[in-house]
Amino acid sequence: MVHEQLHHPMDHSADDGFAEKSDGFMNWLKSHPGVRVSFKIRIADLRSNAAGRGVETVACEEIAQDEELFAIPENLVLSVQNSKLKDHLNFTDKELDSWLSLIVTMIYEYLHGGASRWSSYFAVLPTDFDTLMFWSQDELRELQGSSVLSKIGRQEADEMIMGKVYPLILDYPGLFPTPKELSSFNSQQGKEAILHLAHRMGTLIMAYAFDIENEMDREEEDQDGEDGYITDNEQETAKGMVPLADMLNADAHRNNARLFQEDGYFIMKSIVPISMEEEIFNDYGELPRADLLRRYGYITENYSPYDVVEISLEAICKVAGVEKNCPQLELLETAEILEDGYSLLRPETDANLVEAISPELIVLLRTLTMTPDNLNQMRVKGKLPKPQLDQASAKLLIEVLQSRQNDYPTTIAQDDELLHSTHSHRREMAIRVRKGEKEVLQLLLNGLHTYLGEIAESPKHQPKRSNPDTGKGRKMPKLK
Image (cartoon, rainbow, N blue to C red; front, side, top):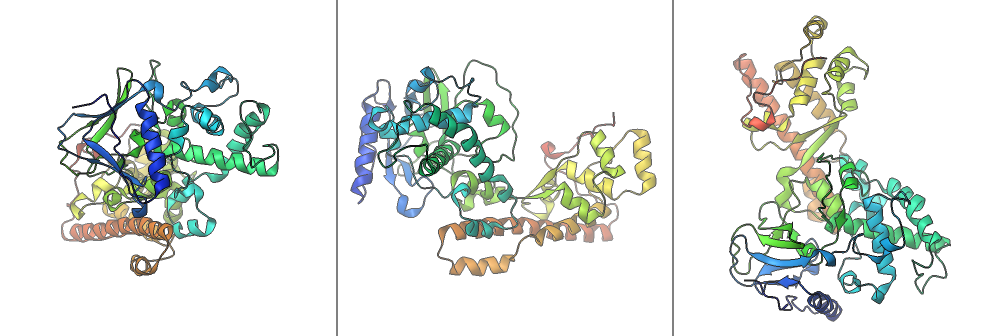
């Protein structure tokens, strides 16, 4: 049952400032027509537990499946479309994509303080972050070996902010009031203030914003490996900050709620029955802990099954002793299946070894281990090797994985010892991330050695894929 009347679902903590801001936020929310919040939920302060956002949303009563938890009108979302700034600036003329447009919009609303309709919302949004964008170089060194370091994009983000956001703010001083502690944004101190503010808004968007659907068709390509705050896909998708929706923590295993956009509302609904006093969780998807840390600033063991290890094509070629313009890679390039890098999943058991290795990687390994005669036959026939791991490709992969292990300065055993002695929260998270990646490497190596032993006993033995989505029955493309 959903009530039009909005109760105060905030638990008051010992921090009176937090309670005051929380009450102000809920009063602000209640003052807007159309807002609905179920009396069956409450929000508690968990900042002392370092639990994600620092709050938890729990059920006060039994909640049925598909029950509305709260509904926020679209016109209350903090977005480019709902801000008055769009009436003064043409973001297209300024060559600002959807991400930069929202960053600028949030800076505009924040600088207007109490005059902004979202001032009470800003009061409860985080101001300090553990996302990798805010780590020092010494802290980032704890992640040495992890591919996540190449995805932070701090320099690219700085250049983007200084190249587009900062000049725009200087050009429109009437739209962006200078805080009392600054004489002007047109100074070194002002530049640093804008840089910090833009990073803060960009981090809030990355961690808490939701996609906003519109009537225009959008491309459906899902691309990974983004740098800074932006991906190719995210540039095409309008985003907005949905008040209250961002106060749900996420858990891959205990996800029991989901946000829907329908009939002019953003509606959070239960997707399974929820017991009394059970926490309500959204879900970020099957993210490796490295990306969870990069995007949201925290990790949880429940995401460890999604840990991956990334290996570049360059690293594979180095171990195989070939150049990037070699005939083997030219064959795969022609077939359009060659990639710059490959992600290896955490295998659950030795039986799931092949599911952890992409068909494209197996084809690459088999092509690199072919004799010149076999390679020439493949080229003549216009075919590629089947994505089935054989003895030669398994041995090459073992060498690649062992080389990849050397990228990490510590062992799993050393990481276990460090976890018992470290008192730094960020260092602990970094150790757990790199340890998880090394566990993936070790599990794969163990499985490959077991597989080679089975081949030695039974030469006809070949591992088969149990998951049809990971390559079973899949035909590799012919050469064009």
